[in-house]
Image (cartoon, rainbow, N blue to C red; front, side):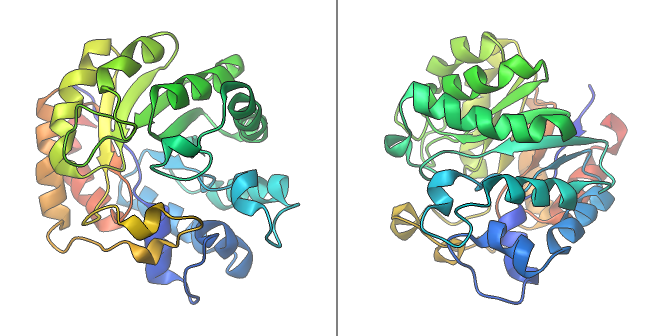
Length: 288
């Protein structure tokens, strides 16, 4: 079995390193305020053993930029993110496509035509410099379908990363069964993952998604919970509290369970830093 190591979470790592306080445009604004900081995080993840670097484009959406000084800099911000990830040292670059509206809020996701149009605009900007795409924190079946409709035309691999209920890994954040996304994934995705969910519920999700017959894996977050404050309009990442028990060793213990279930793609989401990725790389060195 060959294990592919993804990188970890960008946003929370920037909190630890940046000079300013988080804003609703946190990981986006920091590229202008502190050029080179995002590049340093990418390099540190690569040096820790990440084989795939994920672009800092998760939150660059027109709806996030509306009413801010960055409203007319949509394309420029994507170019900044691609410049920061260039030559980071990882073998491949994945273009990150985050959710429209807000994370964990499938109720805010636009209808199909609008979503595909917006996602396709991002894909067009990222495609020339990315080896694959990851639709991240996909919270509903509708969301998954829109990601595939917007990306498959490129001919590049598309990975779907689903976020699941933190108390029941068999359900998406929308409340729909994870099983309902399998027909969508099987119609075009190159891999199916679970991301930005508590690590304890990921095994239940993996038991479902492996039935798709696609390469699968996981990258969990390290939050205590997704707080009510974070589900409000224009949240900041400092409304979320990091777990103290999720050390690199503890996180890798969870990942060993995922690999035992057949996962071949592992990494980290929010609050999973370079030390965690280094431990994953060490634990699974014989499978690299």
